[in-house]
Image (cartoon, rainbow, N blue to C red; front, side, top):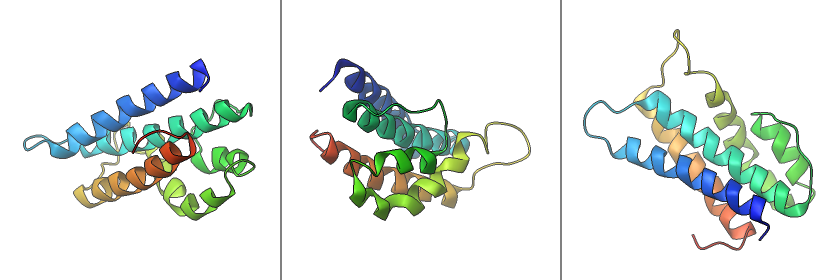
Length: 128
């Protein structure tokens, strides 16, 4: 694995760990942060895969745009398009006043992140 790919994976795992910690919180769970870190985890795994394949990518948070690039090397990821589209909004949506994530949307963001993380780790030949 390329060193830069490894860095993307480590960053993705940091976001995954933060998402999981927030999900387990008994008091004062921050659903906004959980959704944000779910999106960030998926984004960084997409960028890790692109990096490993030597595919340049723009500095974007749009997971579907990144997916379009990744399909050249991971055509089966078309199956997770809806999951990535769902997560894309969380890059910005709940970061500012005016909107807040519900418990249900946080739960769904976590589920979709976990689905994609599993696919990404398999593609990168990492243990689940």
